[in-house]
Amino acid sequence: MILCAGNNETFDFATPIGVGLVDSAMSLTRICLTDKPEFILFVGSAGSYGAHNIHDIIESKTAANIELGFLDKSAYTPIDNVISAQTEDIKDVIVNSSNYITTSRSAMEKMSALDIGIENMEFFAVMRVAQVFGIPAGGVFCVTNFCNDRAHQDFIANHGFAKVLLKAHLEEKGILRG
Image (cartoon, rainbow, N blue to C red; front, side, top):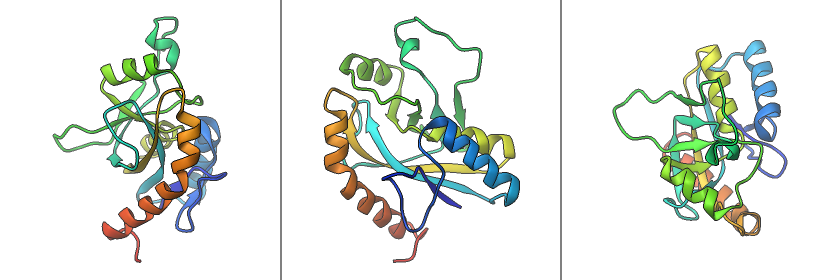
């Protein structure tokens, strides 16, 4: 099953599950309870913490939920905030998820120093629901912006083409038929 966020990030080949951690988790849980998929592939846009360039395609099976308060040590969590379905011994790009978009160069650099590559609002929720239901899962992302003070403007400018690149990548991989 191929999933996407929704709102302005929809694809004719994907089921929208909502924007952010909460809506996507609720929607995907509902799907898994009524018609459990054999595999979940989430597709969407992402912001880069610096190591990846705009229009890069990133495949990942590892998600994190690192909130900005963690970076300045003003918050902690008792939950496991990194989930990976990666079974091979290769370095996976960690995709961070939060209900907030990072717009601080300092936060971007701190995330990069933690080896976190990109951010997407929904991926952690998708991976957690998949983990609970025992469903193999992964994600494919196209970078639309860097996580800095231009994040929103660059996202708007690059989002349409990112959707085209994602579809072409899935066709090239044989996941979609052209």
